[in-house]
Amino acid sequence: MIEDDVRAAFAQHEALTPPTGPVRAAIDRLAAVRRRRRQRLRAGGVALALFGVLGVGIPQLTPDRAAEDAAMLNEPVPPAPAGALNVLLLGLDATSDQRPPLADSVLLVHIPADRSRPFLVSLPRDLQVAIPGHGRDKLNAAFAYGSRSDPPDLARGYDLTRRTVAELTGVRVDAGVVLTYPALRRLTDTVDGVEVCLPREIRSIHTSRVFPAGCQRLGGAASVDLLRQRRGLPEGGLDRDRNAQLFAAGLVRRAAEQGVLTNPVRLSELLRAGGADLVVDDGGLPLLDLVRVLPQLKSVDPVGLSLPVKPLDGARWVRPDPTATPEFLAALREDRLAQWAAQHPGRVNRTR
Image (cartoon, rainbow, N blue to C red; front, side, top):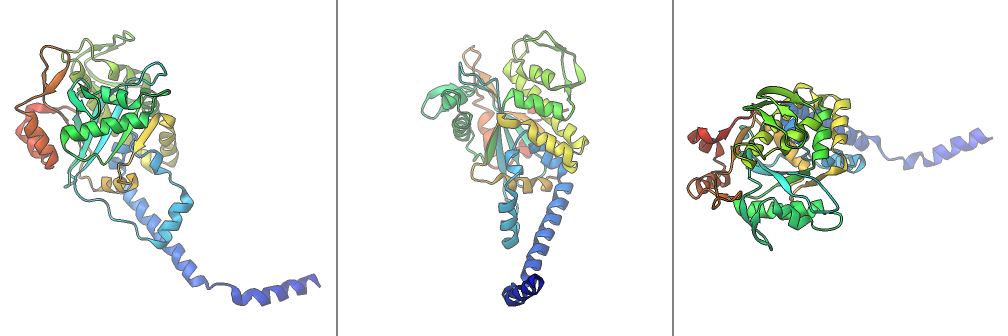
């Protein structure tokens, strides 16, 4: 009797069942999109490492799957953004309840419109700049002013630094990330260390560790120790900026060598490594859209550059070089850094 009732119920409601054709077509579209995405990520794995290992977009690379799939069922994948792009990377000295942190490393990653290769532009921490709402001070103080709260607000610190950098350079900052030393240490250990080739011996004033001249692989703790060093270096903070560029380029190469983005286990480890110490800003450009740009890069071997500066009245502060800086910033705004670097080879920093 029960079996007859069930059959009757199915027969009664069979006419209400929606046709399977549209559902099947939607599933096929979703599968095709995912196949194309996998192909793009394989083709651009090395390029994506440039931002992935430095923290850019890490929280954005794991969006809510249900919402994403629902959108993909009805909408085509948008094209990658065109034109030059700028991503601001900030390395913090520390976070503490006692004092607001300083941005000891300020790096602007410029992706040219021709997608030739990335440019790493260091902006000195001791550069005298106009900080919106706070007069003139060192560039690294912008983060401290913005983040001043209990506990420090890293997002607000980033925002004030971003506005300061935008006013200084005249370029739009499309996205950015705040990376603390604990996060950097974990990222480095996740890729089993980074090779850095130093032009001279460096002795740590914090740990007495000696970094010999030449190439060496550094773990997370040693990497952080190296990146903190500026006292005792011939050009202080400027030399530390150059070491940061060497480290960043080495981190990219290490992640690429390990095929992090083609190994789900390794990728998962890397995405978890940054943890809560990362603050990411998309600046109005969704970082997943930024990721779509990276496979277009012809090379991920970066060019290292620094804003041209001069000492400020014998102090440890520096100021923009009145002769070279206007030309450099014009090249940055007009997306001509490759030509500028070719014309000024002595100002190009080694990244190997």
